[in-house]
Length: 266
Image 1 (cartoon, rainbow, N blue to C red):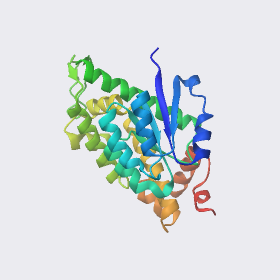
Image 2 (image 1 turned 90 degrees about the vertical axis):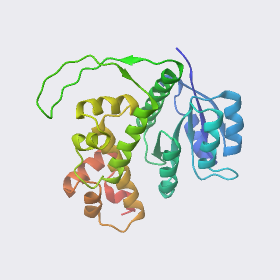
Image 3 (image 1 turned 30 degrees about the horizontal axis):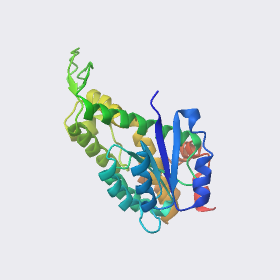
Image 4 (image 1 turned 90 degrees about the horizontal axis):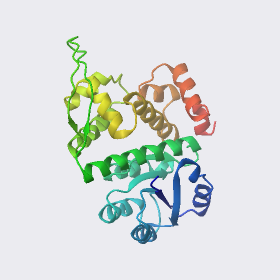
């Protein structure tokens, strides 16, 4: 089995030490280095060519955004996972635009969250390698629910950057409309695909189902609003598209292991 190499980039020693304690090899990953700023990280990347990079954003000498920009010229295949603080949210959005895979919130993410993020990054890495090395075909069966016509066709799907662009467009639409009742059909229409085909492609490209992605995006936005806004909790629930306050509190508590008021120090 090919080794999946990981490096850690964070200026805080306790964060690096904590991540070094993670059972990397248990999950099929190998920690091959660490750096405390972007400059050190770039030198490390040249030497070890990591597959996955876990990086902070706000660091001295070279911040995470500049590091990501430079990394893409050195190792464009490297998958990037951000590990950030609440107040770095705006930077995290920019980092995602630059090509970061996703972000985890310091002090909030669990071991399983990290494992899931690593696995999604690995899947995406494998997909990119396939794209770059050779064109490959995926068989799929499609059924058009809109006109209730049951069809079963074997189609040839060539995964290209065009598909990834369409999925990015869909993700942007989701993030801009989290306060609304977003349906898969509605999202699929934004990129010109049938709901079934879009769901299939979204999972292949991102590693998430559409439903899971929307849920996680809503939870992350809720955390941000709890920490950095004066909105009431019921207002936040409405803002993330879950207007039932009791239901929002229940699923939020189940997801994070703490009730919403905990993140306000109440």
